[in-house]
Amino acid sequence: GAGVSQSPSNKVTEKGKDVELRCDPISGHTALYWYRQSLGQGLEFLIYFQGNSAPDKSGLPSDRFSAERTGGSVSTLTIQRTQQEDSAVYLCASSLAYRRAKNIQYFGAGTRLSVL
Amino acid sequence: AQKITQTQPGMFVQEKEAVTLDCTYDTSDQSYGLFWYKQPSSGEMIFLIYQGSYDEQNATEGRYSLNFQKARKSANLVISASQLGDSAMYFCAPRSGNYGQNFVFGPGTRLSVLP
Image 1 (cartoon, rainbow over the protein chains, first blue to last red):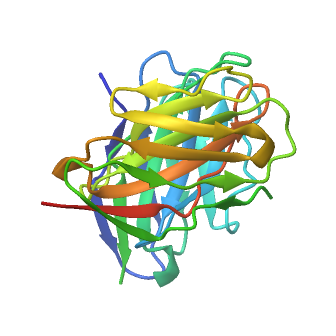
Image 2: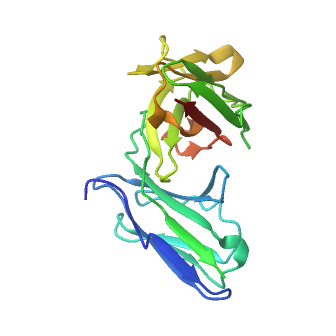
């Protein structure tokens, strides 16, 4: 597609359930990022994928959070045993990844997760 | 971790006036990029403008320009001739690393343009 696509756009779940959020990056973009944005707050980095390199997981808040990227394209962010504090908008971005280049990140519309 | 400061949590500007949104950061890298993004109430993040740390001139993109002062680690966004559609959150985001993979967003400034 022309832009970064995220699904679902909204997800309501019960505390303790697992959820999967999907991100389809711009074709040809080798770098993919996940961020979390709580209401009225800035963006919190979660995880970064670049090509076939090991992902940078330094931003994941707990071991309940995990992400994978299959075939260097689509990524899935999984939250296990959801808690109310996980409620937020989860944003995905992708970019080219040329050395020392501008590498603008382009964002999807986000998934709004509500944990009841 | 790198700290980014946007000192104005909220700002108001009259339509057609110019406005400056502040951003300072504390990177220790000599080579980095500085991005500004806009987030309207609809939620999408929109890239506005980029400044490379070694660029000799301040970046401009249409009505957007940067007042980049490398020694002060400051990159203020100037919006000229404000429009109602400029009402949004604005985030400053320095990036570093060989592939720009170290990306940190500031807390944002909410701009409201008054008719």
